[in-house]
Length: 572
Image 1 (spheres, rainbow, N blue to C red):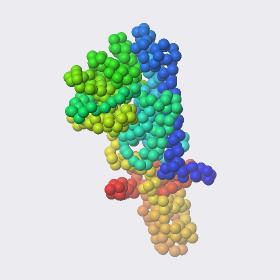
Image 2 (cartoon, rainbow, N blue to C red; image 1 turned 120 degrees about the vertical axis):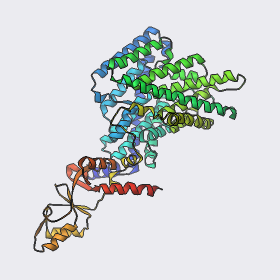
Image 3 (spheres, one colour; image 1 turned 45 degrees about the horizontal axis):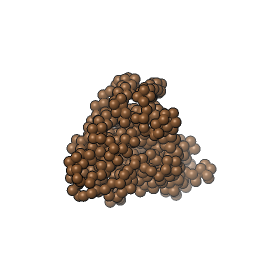
C-alpha cells in the first residue's frame, strides 16, 4: 500500500477522524445543492419560458386546454418511462432513502437517483399535485452515498454522509439550514449525536449558500408579519393542534386505503391519478403543481374560506393517492399545502367568531403548516425549527410548540399511527423500525470492538519461529489461508509436550480452534452480527484490504455483546 493511500485511509475512509469526514460532508453539501439547484431550474425554466404565466407555479394562468395537455402528456410519458424500468430500479423518494439506510448501510444506486431526478421533473412540470422535497431528499442522500462509495468510506460514516446530503437538499429547497440538519437526524439517521452534527451542519450551511447565491435570500414562502396578540388565543391554538392531528390522521389513513391500488397495473394507478387530477383541476386549478403560490396567498389571507376547504380536501385526496402508488414525486410539499389551508380556515373562522379582535390569519396558517408537517412526518422538532426559520420570528416558538406537539400526540397516541413514511413502507418485508440496540450497533465501527493483538502464522511453524511468536504475546493466532483461529497457549503446550519436534503442525496439535469468516474493516457491528448469524459462527477476521490480505484484527460475538452492554453504562 502506498503511503498516500495509507494516509487517505487513516484520515478519511477507515477511521473516526472528524476532519476528514467534515471535508467530505462539505463537498457533499456543495454537490447536492448544485444538483437541487439544477433540479429546481429544470422545473421552473420550461414553465416560465414556454408559457406566459409569470411564475413557474401559476398554473391557474394557463388555459384549461394547455393544463390538460400538460397533465396528460406528463402522465403518459411517466408511464411509458417506467414501463421499461425494472422493478428494482423504481424505488425512490424518502422511503427509498429510509430503506437503503436500514438495510444497505446507506448504499444508494446511481440509476435510481438519475431516474428520480428525471421523473420528478416530468411530474412537476406537467402539473401533477405533488412536491419537490421528497425527490430532493433522495437526490441529496444519493449524492452523499455516491461520494462515500467512491471514497470507500466505512459504513457508519457513509450513513452520516448520506444524511448530510439530505440536510443540504432540505436547506437548498426551503432556505432553512437548521431545519435541514434536524430533519436529517430526526427522520433519516433516527438519532442525535455529536459525531453526526458537525458534518451535517457543514453540509446544510453549504446547501444554503448555494441556494442563496442562485435564488436569493428569501425563503420558500412569502411570510407576512405574524404575532400572538394575546394569551387568550392559546386555547384556540390548542384546538388548531387537535384539528391538525385529526386531519393528519385522515391523511395517513387515506394513504393506507389507497395502497390497495398497489396491485393494479401501472397504467391504471398512475393513469387514474392523472385523470383525477385533470378532473379536479377543471374547477380548482390551484391544486396543480407544488402550489406554493396558493400557500403564499393563504398566508396573506387572500383565499376565501370555502376555497380553502375545497383545496384541503382535493390536495389530501390527490397527494395520498400519489404517495400510496409510489408516484415519483414528494408528499412534503402537499402536506405543507394542506396545513396552510387548514390554518387559513382556522384563522378565518376566528375572524368570523370574533370580528373585532385583531387576528393574524397568516399566523394560524403557519401554525397549521408546522402542525401538519410534525404530525404526518413524525418530525416535530424539524417542523418547529422550520417555523422559526421561515418566519424569522421567535414569537412563533411557543404557539408553534403547542400546536405541533398536540397534533403529533393525536396521531401517535390517540390513533396509534406511525409516520406516513413508515405506512408507505408497511408492505416492504425488508424494512423494520430499528431497535435502540440495533441502531447503536449500526452506527458503531467494527474497529471499536475488535481485538488487534493477532498474529498471522503458517500452518507449520518452526520451533524458533514459535518462540518469537510467543514472545509477542498475541491473544490469537490466525492460520494463513485457512480462516481459522487458534490460541497461542496450544503452541506453548506443544513445545513442552514434544521438545524434539522441529516444526509444529497447527492443525494436528490439540487446540481450541475457531472457524471464522471474513469481513471488511468498513463494516459496522451490526454487519458483523448479521454475518455471524448467516454463517453460524462466533468469530470474524477483519480485513483492512482483503485483496492484499491485510488483516486488522478479529472480532467475536462476545466482543460485540460486551461492547453494547458496557456502552450505555459508559454514557450514563
